[in-house]
Length: 240
Image 1 (cartoon, one colour):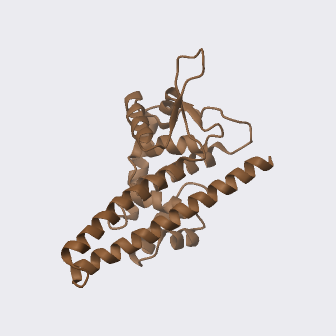
Image 2 (cartoon, helix red, strand yellow):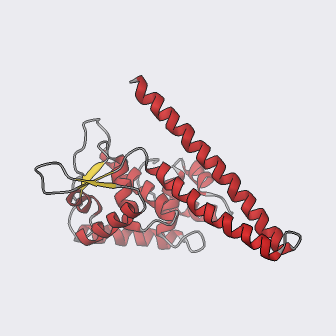
């Protein structure tokens, strides 16, 4: 049923959809499930080119046996009393994490960011993250260092307390996009230099010139979008 665990028949339909060349969204629509659920299932089990229904079903049983042998999963750390379904929140966390991994983020770092993002407070301790992700403290520490370097989280310590908390805010994506624009600026500068060396009338020079033009348009759109988002955020905050 939609929202429950994938069945053997679901996995056969996923495999058939991939064989037809369908995207995750279309396969999910046919199954009545989110595209992120399909993407996570395929990513876990060989990727689009290596997914097989029988193999995925057996791998899922194997993971379930390992979890059972390791003991029951730790209960989620309470955050607020909104009456949410814990299983649905856990599935959302896993789906969000899978999307971030698909974008190139390391697995544990993606899990840390996903846990923080679905938490109303936007803040968790290392112990909270170890409990939720079931990974070692060292893995959490490395993931936090990576995310901090990327500007995706902050550390804070409440006066009188020894434990640090890791915190996200509404500005993390704006900071990430600004880093992207800075990287694009470097690429644009190099592309323009390449045009001067190769000549704009040559195929190679034209290729660099086209790339520079695209990156300039992307950066302009990103910066305008960030400024518009900040104006809206300021207006929303001022109206409260």
